[in-house]
Image (tube, rainbow, N blue to C red):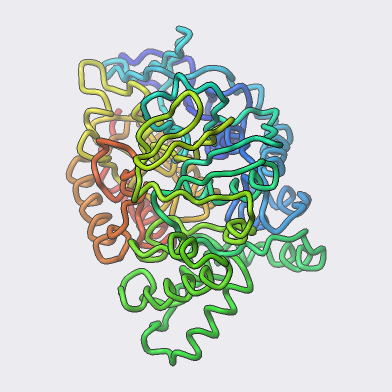
Length: 540
């Protein structure tokens, strides 16, 4: 890019933070438009969430043939997925294959955690510094830090004196953990806990599951990939990828529903739910009826259907009632996917501990103590989630020289324009940031859409001999108001979820994703660009 005026020449055109699926694709696209780019990654390997999350049962809840890059047809035709739903090792192998196929590793710095990113307005440069003191300057900064990349270890008193071993799902040892013959406690029954609990139960002498909030989970019906299904799917890839662009969640085959759950006869509605239950997966339920996530009575028809399934699976009626959620609409928290989760509570070596009724008081030398009892344990696995969507960005000291840190600007909740840009922070982009569909969509679809938009934007700036872009405050305010208005028209805010930041003490309760649908969001982004980047200030 040309550098008019007094601007210094930066070391790079673009610096990218994070070497997960987002950062690697951003590197590929920046190269493709002729920009010099480099990725900085805190971990010792690439892969992002699929590098860190190696806990037992870690698996994607989107089918493998959809949860993959769409940008290269040869890649998507040639890669063979072993199962319907990709497990962590398979997904990490795929990411490593992509990095090698497109020669991405040579521009990735591993073991390089970014501590600080400061924009110099006079020089129109970002300077980033690692925790080890290495610095790099770039014209543009792209944050590909991920939405679920800052593990939350709960602050129970006494953890440091526990004599056994403890683990967090997001920081799991690469070599794995053998729980054979051990007394194990799992704290947390969200998506991660629901994946790991059945497998740990098969090893442990005894497993205590500490549940504060029951979550809805549907069967995955995972199975080895059927070669004929794969062949037919790949033959139709182009149409499927195009269709996904205009769906609610970026997955083909699940168009926006048109029927109300309350106008369909009860027998037909139950038949449809039963068909979806047997089929497996979550998206079918989420897109089953147009009022599923809008009308409480419509939502309750599905919620009670799943509760009935739980009661039929779990033999102990008291345990079944504890596992049957009654405090939030189904789908308003992340709808989980499992293999044998509810069946696990029929095992003699599994005990469910209700810590809503009897909260955890402390971690002792020998285990976990609640207000009612102490549970002796040899190992504890925390499935307590992440500081989602904003945590990784807030951990970095991002600021304009002389101005407040991004974490302070967002102290009352994140404010972005389109989830892509932050007013007051020029030449600064976020991939799948708060205010975008991101976590409420097929993530790789969202990553590609954001990255392609950023790449097109930088090409436009270069063609116009411009080198600075910043979101307008008014545009951000209007977008945040729109995101909130859309969410308030749904049942999502009714749940204390990580979508709301409710799992982090002291974090403001703000619904962060955009739930207006992938198709609607994409059209908005395209319109903004077509209108000369409406809502942005472009300058030299």
